[in-house]
Each structure stands twice: as structure tokens, then as C-alpha cells.
Length: 256
Image (tube, rainbow, N blue to C red; front, side, top):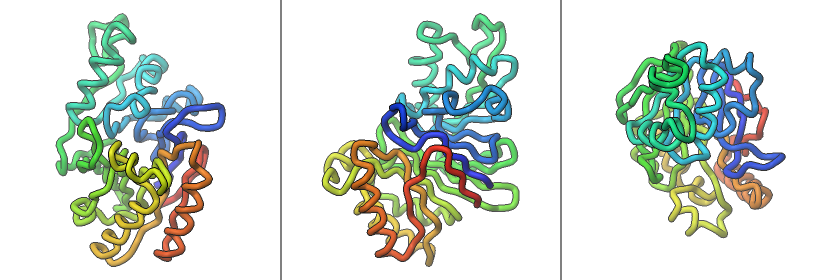
């Protein structure tokens, strides 16, 4: 699997993009920068979009993607709560057309909304996808995504501490994990349902105990204002654990 990061931050600016990444150019995971970082021809290759939860920075690109690709129907896969938020707040017929309805101005559905239940694997465009509940508002989930050749990644989505139950169910080659704030803002991170480097270290220690080893870890959802501090602290965690842990950057590709 080739993982291509489109956005890796929690704030949008000239130099930073909201979280979104592609798997093998056909499966999109979250949609913060789904449209702004891809050409129209690149967008045409995407067959399905996974959404971790309904916060705006993770669903922002869905309506524009639907508009750009209205000649076909693209699957959007998420929990019922996330799909309700998308339908009632973005593709609601007011802010944007009802792209998931044949009653829209297109006279056809550009999006097919498919709900997932936690721990119930679904096959999506050749990948096995399993939603896993995490500690974040709006019924946030992570995704275990496994290719046909049994390579897998686990994306935490936005999450706070307490991933131990998850580690007993996943054994991926790559973890894409939310680390939003530095250790100095640990209380704020926990209250908002995010991680800081110290919390990540504690979670990875538990993962090591469960699986016997640590996979490669790519950090996303980084606050640009605190990125230098987060990067220093992440390097410290990597050194302490003897693991490959680093902040993912826009445009970066990882092969699993």
C-alpha cells in the first residue's frame, strides 16, 4: 500500500493543510484537504472516502469533491452519526446541494452514503475496512485498513488517551496517529480528545506489550503553532522506545 498524505495539520494556512490521505490513490481517508491538494484527474481515481467523525476539518472537502465528480457515484463510508452530520450540515440542500440524493439538481446521487458499525469489517474497493471506536467527540472512530495482500494500517482518527482496548484487535505495519498539542498542553489535549507526545508514548508502550513490537508511526493533526516543540518531543519518544516515529508532512508518501 502507498500512503500519500495530502494534509497533516489541524489548522489550514498557506503552508499547512487539514487532515486527509490517500491509499493507493483510490481510497481517501478523511477529507480536510481532499480537493485542494489533488488535480481533477487525480480526484477521478478515488473510488471511496472514509470519514473518521463529523468535525468540519475532517469532512470539509466532501461537497467540493462531489461537485467535481458528479458524473459518477462515490462511496462515503462512516458511522451513522458522521453521515447524519454530513447530510444535515453540509450536503443539506442549503449550504451545498443534496449530493447523496437523486432529488438534487443533478437528478442523480453523486455520493452513496454507507454506514459502518464498530468492529464489523466491510470490503471497500478491494480493502477490508474495520471501524474502531476511539476517545473523541461525535462518536469518533479509527480505521483498520487491510489490503488484499494482508498489509494493514491503523488510522486513529482524532483520539484522546485510552487506546489499550484497540491494541488487542489490531496489528498493523503502520499507525497514523493524532498528536495535536505538545506536552505543555496535555490537559487541553485530553479534555478535547487528542494526544500529546507523552500520551502517545504511554499508548505505544501498551501496544508494545500487546503485540510484542512497535510498527512505524506517522503523526498527523499537528498544531502548526506548536509543531517545532511537538517534533522535538516526538523525537524523544522515538529514541526512548527505539521506534520509527515521525511527523508526516504534506506531499509525503509511505509504502507499507
